[in-house]
Length: 160
Image (cartoon, rainbow, N blue to C red):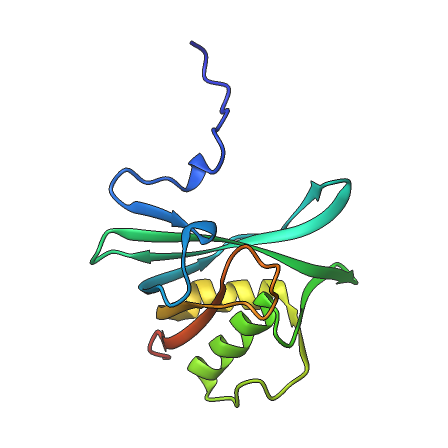
């Protein structure tokens, strides 16, 4: 058979040495500690509408477990700079708010919304955050099929 690079579902996140768990499989109050990685943001079509999505992947090397969390977000471009937006109570807001609190000691739920330059967020998380502890929490949205993510602890690499 000729390899055409066809993948089955989210097979590109599979790792034979790790148990891969997707956001849709997680229950509220689940927790993981490990390396954090943010993928690039991609535009996809869902039911005739364009959506923007990125993946947050947390790898726990000690317990050989990996969380793969697809995050759908509102994104907009200004002068070729992609920013993401999160309103209070939403999945993106909770992720950014709790990460900022864990890394910078900012007050939780102080702002009504966040507008974040995605490339800066991605670069900082991927290059400067050594380890995080993330737990799942019940979404404020009663129709949500998956829990939100809240960063409980975060450790940055030592700065020179």
